[in-house]
Amino acid sequence: ANLATDSRPICIVGAGVAGLYAALILQDLGIKYEILEASDRIGGRIWTHRFNGDVGYNAARNTSERYDYYDVGAMRFPKIPFMDQVFDLFKRIKIEDLLIPYTFHHPNNLLCYNLRGPVTREVAAQTVDYFHVSVSNGGTVPDRYAQEQPKDWIDRIYDPFKCLFAKMNTVDPSQRWKAFREAWMELTKYEHLSTRGYMLAGKEGKAEDAPDPYPESVVHWLETMDSGTGLYDKAFVESVMGSLDFDWPFPEHNPHPSVESPSWYCIDGGADHMIREMACKLSKQSKPKTNQTVVKIEQSEDPKGMKVTIRDDQGGLDTREYAQVISTVPLGCLQTIDIDRAGLTYSQREAIRSLQYEASTKIGIKFKKRWWEDPAVMGKDNIIQGGQSQTDIPIRTCVYPSYGLNCPSAPGVLLASYTWAQDAARFGSLAQGQGTDADKDLLETTLNNLEKLHGISREKFGDVLDHKTHAWYNDRYARGAFAHFGPGQFGRAYDNKSLFASLKAPAAGGKFHIAGEATSVHHAWVLGALNSAWRAVFNALICRPDKRRELVKRWPTPDEESVKMLLQLAALAEDNCL
Ligand code: PHE
Image: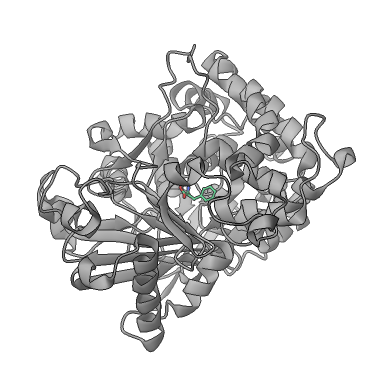
């Protein structure tokens, strides 16, 4: 069949934010599509848990019913040059008025490490070695290092690279991709190293302006204060990208008017407002279909296209013909779909199996009241409104709601623990379902840790009304929280031999495209999902230059892509344009 006139739809597998974004673009370009979702819910890793169900979704702003939730998945959006696509999408789906400030740090947030604290960040910073990690205080960190803050040592490592990305602040937005590319090429010179490896390595293996190697005890200390347990064993590239996301190098005097001063946002009422508004924009005939499990994706020869076999909730199988397929499901889910005859290369199949995902677990507790905002509990100068407290005890990070602050009767929902990596995997072992003995252990540990982190006993918290834990590695439809590659997995070559780049190239002679945040450089952000969807649609239009040009004109090109390089990578598939 001639791809340019093929009237069969494109099949989008997965109705998370990547799948819905691909659908919005295709609809805008006048191309037919169908979205298949295996679970009974759309949104994927954008998921708002409401203790009061849909009542909360429909409740008016600043009423208590509205704030009975926490975001189990994506919850915070930094306004930095990287994230343009995300804010552009908010505009397109008209939810800008739902964006409210997300407080990353509140002055009364607490720290508690090495059995010392709780103490505010500011007070801890005023005392040399407040947490007694130095050799002279009985720890292992050489005194000279412990005299400064962890952030000072971390900045020395990341800043040379962050300065390169900071050029994106000042270049014309149309040239941002070039600034990104240059910085990325420099950063990925060290892509074979873990964060720990980079910090420990001698000068030869490192950037010219890198500091002298850090002692092992220092690297361990920095990981503890800055990250999840074990995350420094993952790719150095991931750490630098993460540091850019959480701490973008804005110039003091921002010369670029389109970039506002650093700020974070969340979505009032829950991140899933975004999902439902995206789905609303899709035409009636093309709404995502839930409970449609894709079990097989294969090439069909006559007419050329793709065949997809779907299992519905009754167990019935149905095989349908499509012009092309865009998979947006996490790689762990794609791995168990039968793709033996989907026209994947060796490198692509290896990538699906081996690119690493991270664990992340969130424990939401609904208390009778917001005790952390209550002067009677905290002391009148110590109340906490938003931000996060951090510790080395198992809960690691406790995130206070930045929403419902203008609603005096807002429910006492607290993200009591947000963990990554080994911390998340260990809590994940206990997340065996509400009411199980393991779950009771989990709740008990969490309450115990909250007492320690805040230095108050649990009677003062008041009643626990409900709780909800989610360990993303245990999720049937996620099989990991987000991609977080190991050393060497990004690769430097932009060809179909490296694991990462090969995954971005079309398969099946241009008819099968693999998207999802894992296939973007921006892992663990909505941005990565959007960028991947844009690239998958671009590749789906390889044989339709007219539509491709419309795409580039109407939908922002991700900074991590260049049209020229995409065409090069796809050239292998081009001879299939009949
Ligand atoms: N975006 C997520 C957050 O805000 C997760 C993330 C983890 C992002 C690690 C980057 C690095 O917490």
